[in-house]
Image 1 (cartoon, rainbow, N blue to C red):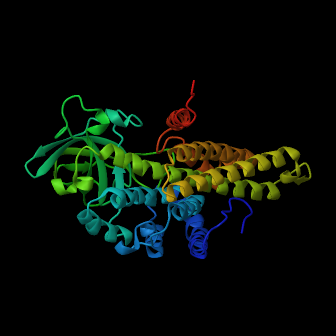
Image 2: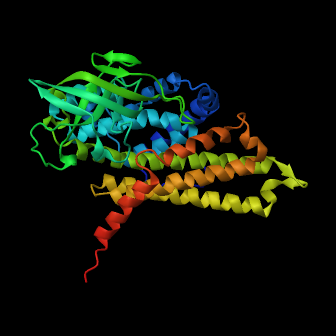
Image 3: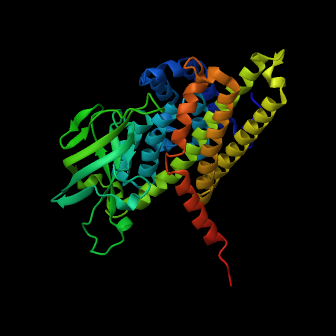
Length: 401
């Protein structure tokens, strides 16, 4: 077992789960990840393996067929999976956020209907907030739902859906002015709809189109898509929680735990970059000795390892705070910000250690170098995290003059 990024105080069950996942990553993901990524191929065999391990139900309560594990356990699993291939962690992360939102905010009927099949991996989740003209400015959403009898009619265009094609359930955030008088704050006139659809591309149900995969610099294998709603009719019983106007708060709750998982992804990618860098530094010789014996490289390795350790500690702290029932938006924002920034820096240092070979597609570090930037943007940019952190600090340290 590696010295870095260890987590004290885990139960025997948690240690067994993590050992199983790490073994799966080493044997089933790392050997094939780069080849699949270069082909932008969906890792169906890997996903089937994760399904068999029960990871799609890791945090879903046991009464619904899940494992009922904590956010910490889930985040540590995500860290291991991202160490193997970040795209695979994205496949389960969006599913996890939708399952979490259902568990926290769904009606009894919605939980009974969706959670058992989500735990089994038979229903796979995606969630949708962003639109072509907005990302972090969630309150500026223009997609709209209008009540029509016992149904709502949804219209609008959404953007950046991870698992948009392969998912069969999408939690979609739209404006819904019904029941909310003129002048209501924008974030109080939003509703989350549970949209069921067929996996695939094109018109996946009447009024709902998934045009195709967006071609990306990195984060390949997993499908990222648009979602177009044109007269999409959704029954009223598919409003998350059964009441309109609560969608913004429901989504923010989901994103809060999602930020812990993005931090975990950053930790995992950084760990892999460190592993690749320190291995290569002991194999590559210059001026008659391994480059690991040059002080310049040792300084890089020291900085990389310290960043890996610090990011992991902050991620674990944020997860444990949420598990204890406390508000963790400050800690989650800090962890996501630090882990994504450190991940980029550790990956770049590993890239530099590889020299010219880091630029070759034959070496794994080339893939990591293209994947790391996504973490600077996903689940809120670094700048958004700093805004959240700053506001929360001013609340906590209000000047009593």
